[in-house]
Length: 186
Ligand SMILES: CC(C)(COP(=O)(O)OP(=O)(O)OC[C@H]1O[C@@H](n2cnc3c(N)ncnc32)[C@H](O)[C@@H]1OP(=O)(O)O)[C@@H](O)C(=O)NCCC(=O)NCCS
Image (cartoon, rainbow, N blue to C red; front, side):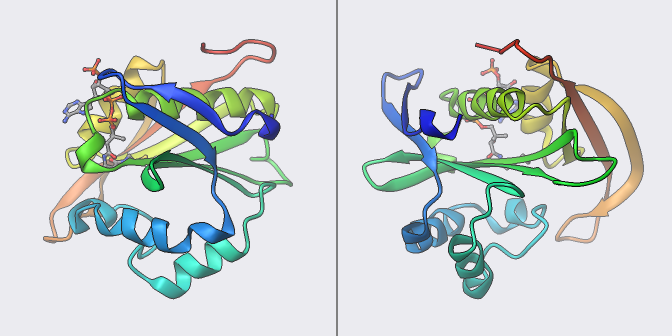
C-alpha cells in the first residue's frame, strides 16, 4: 500500500501532480504550504500550522501507524496535504479520521477530490471500516459538498459547537463514509 507512492495524478487542466508520503526533508516546503493557506482556514485545524516547532516535530516523527500524511507536489512545491489519522488500539481502531487542505491557487481543479480518493483507497487497504471528517458548517462548506459527492453522510451535528476567528459560533458536522473490504473507489 505505501509502496504505491509516489504516484502521478493529472488535474482537470492537464497539469501533472505527484502524490507521495511526507518526508522529514519537507519541513520548509510544508511551512511554505501552510503559509499560503489563509489564517481563517488554518484556524479550523487542531493545531497552529504556523508554529515552526510543531511542524518540525511532525516531520521529524512521522509515524505511519498513527497518521499517514500524503502530500501533492508540483515542481518541489507542495500543493495539497491529506492526513489519515488512526488509533492502533481500542474501540475506535477501525475508524480513520481525515483532514485535507489544498493550496488556494490549485483549487477547483479536482485536486481535493483526487487526494480524497487516495485517502479512501488507503483506508480500504489498511482495513479500516469507516472514515470520519469533522467540518465547521459555513466556513468549510466546500469540503462538506466535496465529501457528500464521495458518499460521506452527515452522521451528527453539534449545534453552535466551534468558533470562528471572529468569535462566531458554527455547527460542527461529523461526516462518515463506510468502507468495504476488497472494494475501492477508483
Ligand atoms: C475543500 C478543499 C479541500 C477542496 O479542494 P479542491 O481541490 O478545490 O476540490 P475539487 O476541485 O476536487 O472540488 C471537489 C468538490 O468540492 C466542492 N467545492 C470545491 N470548492 C468549492 C467552493 N468554493 N464552493 C462550493 N463547493 C466547492 C464541489 O462540490 C466540488 O465538486 P465539483 O467540482 O464537481 O463542483 C479546499 O477548498 C480546501 O483546502 N479548503 C480549505 C480547507 C478545508 O476546508 N479543509 C477541509 C477540512 S477536512
